Image (cartoon, rainbow, N blue to C red; front, side, top):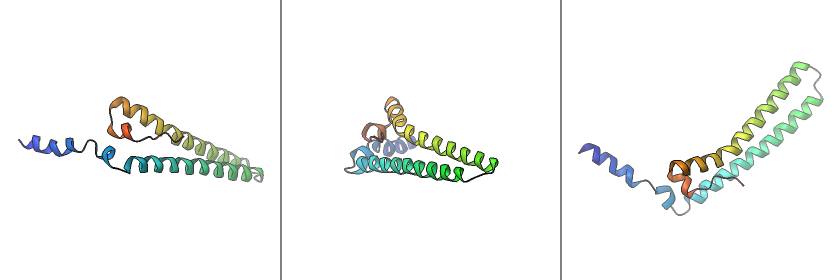
Length: 106
């Protein structure tokens, strides 16, 4: 009897995100804004590292700057892949958030 009472409130909350009026569009907009800011951050870091690389003579510093650029690129790729991956995997697994929130940034 205790397990039935504990399960009912959770089952009743399945579509809370989808049933809210503005919440799905707010989540989608937030994801698009953070993706755009991440891409802008990549461009800024890439350009700053390229500029610093032109004025750096030390090979160790150049190697560090190239590594920093690679790390920034990996982060941007992960940021671009996560939304569509969650959308596809979430709808396949039947996650409620993937059904009503569009996390594809383009």
